[in-house]
Image 1 (cartoon, rainbow, N blue to C red):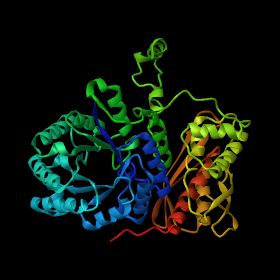
Image 2: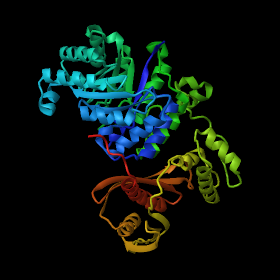
Image 3: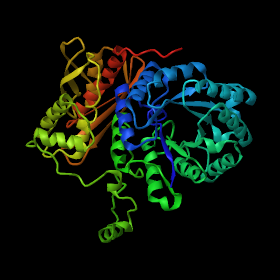
Image 4: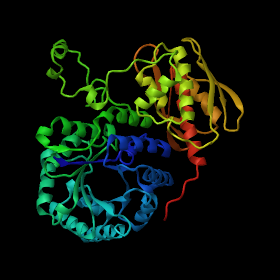
Length: 513
């Protein structure tokens, strides 16, 4: 079968989603999981965009061995130099250069003529090839570009040394038939296309990103780009888990293989959702919580007789197996460690002890600890934070009555090491907590978004809170879990503030200018 490479851009294009701000440690944890998932290429970030992105790309490049790690760069020498500094420690250094080619982008954004754009692209690829053995060149807004101009500029960049050519539908404008036809046209008209990989990158503005990606594969694409859970700018990117499963289930039609470990899909999806704070819609294909639910009586009857009557994908295929026995308060450290290993977590003794302590505390309050509960406990334990003094919640108490003004009292350890108690009021319990915490952190805070969701089922389920706020003008996202949603909300608020403290305290190597 023909091999299709999976290019994952969750950490670059996916992180550009509104409200997502992953730190270096979280990006590294996701990258490790993407490696287990089997991504051929992991786009770790845009090194020249910020010191934080530079550091994240550098650490991921030095850590990941089984996937190729790449970074994004504009067609500029300074971006390429910075990217080389970040990626030189990779197993196989790879660079992704982009330059717009559509008439509207060239005229209004670049303010360049087509001839100038060709020259810039060629010079950038030639310069990148001095450092990088693998150079991918992307024609930004390729679908809205003139096909004849695409042939011309692709011919030139292949001659300059590009090893992969990417044809993005940057604004999600294409239909599957049109997008597939463009790939067929380029395959037939570009000189030397047989020597390079042809890649597809689709956005979901009209809801056709996955369909367009599959159409490109049908018409000769060798690589497909996308994100886990389809996250990304605006309406998002093509969802890689959907593409991988579609190519597997319909291999009779597509006749290709990806090398993706389908058993890691559920865990990868969960991890990305947990760390980005982006909830997966219930009816999401492949990984939504309703993907394998059957409520109709006719469907249920058919399922009982033969699962294949209404289920073309099994939960087991994507790693959502029948839940093992739940752990309880009498479970020991050995069973706890075994479960962590079986779920794919690699924890040090210190991290395991910390997680076990949290598990015991939770087990005293909850009859059974489910797989979902354990996933939350283990997630983040692999993340190594610097020893930066932060805020730590000691206690939160709310006085509330329908006829009284809600009052919150918060006790917390502040970065100086002191334990401080603060109290104030609000229109509701959550607002009272947030108003109190704003006094505690001594800064200007605006709540931009706030939500609480349950982890698992039942009245004793854990509650996960996600708080998106601006602190002294900087947008941050915090999250945390607790059985009490008010406690989870307070912890999530402080988690956002602590991210700012850690980010400010960690010295990050400045990119080369």
